[in-house]
Length: 127
Image (cartoon, one colour):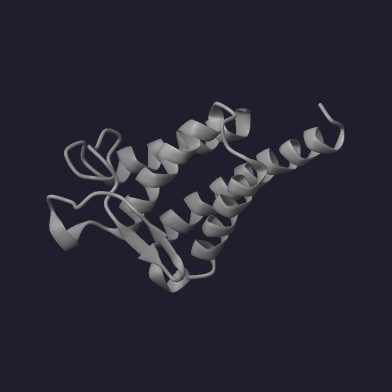
């Protein structure tokens, strides 16, 4: 899906701009660190950097992993909807994130929403 691929590219560009390659959240970390945001908890591994890993770095890496799977069409409508809601919840907490990260999340939300609309259209037309 072109929107999923574009969202993936946006997240990757954001990561490359904000984190050096040897930090979690970069384009090639070993895994995403654990974090939570409100009721949402994102599982991952313990970071070698301990508590210094930013929440936005964790979210970016988890999003990249999820978008990689979604690009292959392996996600259900329900899961895509849940991911969209997670991104929207981030946007509802502007005091917790920097402006650049919020702009990234707005872009990702728009693209996931467009992908979800196409998925729903395919279901309704039995395509």
